[in-house]
Picture 1 (cartoon, each protein chain N blue to C red):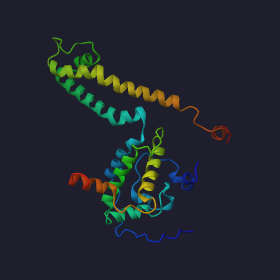
Picture 2: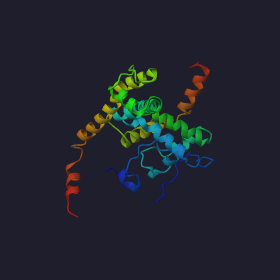
Picture 3: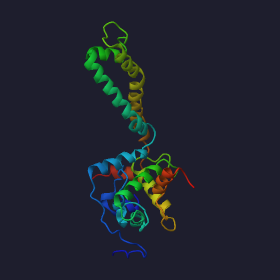
Picture 4: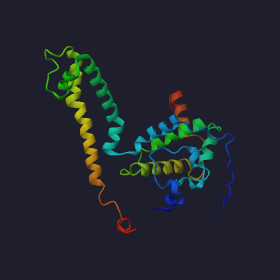
Length: 135
Length: 114
């Protein structure tokens, strides 16, 4: 049975616009506030940091060489070392390597562990029994 | 599962995205919003769906950061709480005479409340 239209409601004169991909993506981006804790931080802050780090890594890889870039990132080689052709660029990478990257990867690990931990004891007894019933 | 979640099989999984106004028009939208809300909100914007949708998204995004959403709610549950709280706030007894997002824009342009 169709509910009667409430009194005083005017149907909009124009139909809604067609849903475009960018509209759907925009709504999904605006909904990032729905997440909490580390997951929210990763999506809102961690992703841009990771992008910056990735760009820095690639630029360094192209300019100073991939092996040197890797060594500078994990601290095997000092950015001021003689074999580093562009120390100024390598210094930024080095700081990211021991500051920003561990923060992001640590947050990822923390999120994974916290999801595993908090996922326990979420079901009711009825739900647990219904899943264990034979087909 | 609540009655709303079982009313429509399509709506059993809460999606982590702000539902557009056009999806809130019907009773079986999966959200407990007043029946006249969506049409009334579009009417406030003089049938400009794009502007109404944009203001709606901005308002729900704002509500997601308020105490209207439970601090431990996350994902689709948080979205549902924000949507229902936003609609309830805007309707109350009757729909606000103006859109709060439009008024914020107007206030910013005029340099605050006069």
